[in-house]
Amino acid sequence: MPTMRRVLALALFSEGVLGGLYPGLSTANHTCNLVEPVLSCSDGAQPGLVDTCCVETYGGLILQTQFWNTYTGLESKGQLLPKDSWTIHGLWPDFCNGSYTQYCDLKRQYDPEPSPNTTTARRMARRYWTGQNQPSWVLWAHEFSKHATCFSTFDTECYGPEYVRHEEVTDFFSTVIAYYQDLPTWRWLAEGGIEPSNKTAYSVSDIQDTLKSKFGKVPYVGCSGPRFNETEAGKGSSDNGYTVLSEMWYYFHVQGRVQRAQGVPVDATGSTTSCAKAPDAVWYYERTPCAVAH
Ligand SMILES: *[C@@H]1O[C@H](CO)[C@@H](O)[C@H](O)[C@H]1NC(C)=O
Ligand SMILES: *[C@@H]1O[C@H](CO)[C@@H](O)[C@H](O)[C@H]1NC(C)=O
Ligand SMILES: *[C@@H]1O[C@H](CO)[C@@H](O)[C@H](O)[C@H]1NC(C)=O
Ligand SMILES: *[C@@H]1O[C@H](CO)[C@@H](O)[C@H](O)[C@H]1NC(C)=O
Ligand SMILES: *[C@@H]1O[C@H](CO)[C@@H](O)[C@H](O)[C@H]1NC(C)=O
Image (cartoon, rainbow, N blue to C red; front, top):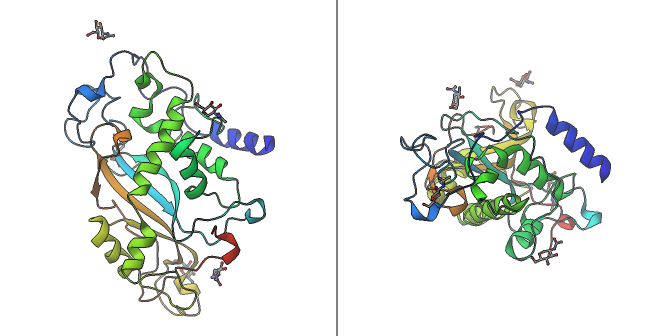
């Protein structure tokens, strides 16, 4: 464990800048409940015009990202995947124009202590936020350090003069879970007749259309694995997209603090998939049975 932590810390310190997003921000009077929520990325969502603790002014395009993995690599340690459910990758603040930054505050590069404590957040994270080839807590710590520090509403000053160290870490985990709970990718796909199969492959357009009909906007569909043009089925094809379904990114603008979990769905910006576009080129693999919790 200590070695793992050191590696993580080194990786984190190799990029980014030191300091909070808005240096000099006061801890006083961030009474967000008293002001009308402003939509991120709208004209009014500017640091000079609103309280940056009450409106996401830094990375206003929010992505809730999910994984489809077929194993965890730590099954023998009891780290399993939830049945009939995708798992959490994270919650990312992109700039409104679709570009992004990361590791915005090297003073807040946390070990996952305290990890989400008690009640819903802890239970949900253990169940649905699962690392692959690494303990889940390493993924949580990484996601906090890399992304949570780039939200204006998770700045520590926002928590007022009574701020308790690590308060925003737990708050971030709860927030990620709140968004994730409204995005049941597994069920949405199943309702469209798209279920994991090691026999039948799918068309990325069907996956995207099905999710658009549920979410209202087009999510980004991510694939990994071999490129189509390098598989048997795709021999001679010029389609070099990837063939193993592995990620889903849902995009939002948010009303007021991200923590309120009032997202307004928007279409994915830029490219909407890394998967092969040829018909029936994408595998949505079944999980290894012993990797699934029952
Ligand atoms: C916070 O609000 C109180 C009450 O309205 C006011 O007296 C105080 O000056 C404000 N503090 C700051 C730093 O704005
Ligand atoms: C996107 O917005 C960010 C933040 O305002 C800015 O730093 C960056 O240069 C912009 N990128 C492009 C490609 O416009
Ligand atoms: C979790 O929170 C409870 C109540 O706030 C506290 O008593 C307990 O020590 C905490 N546990 C851990 C592991 O931090
Ligand atoms: C498949 O596409 C990749 C990326 O464009 C290319 O580098 C590779 O040579 C192609 N492979 C074949 C067998 O055509
Ligand atoms: C399905 O295929 C994937 C990818 O090869 C594999 O990891 C998984 O164990 C297979 N699942 C079943 C139930 O055969």
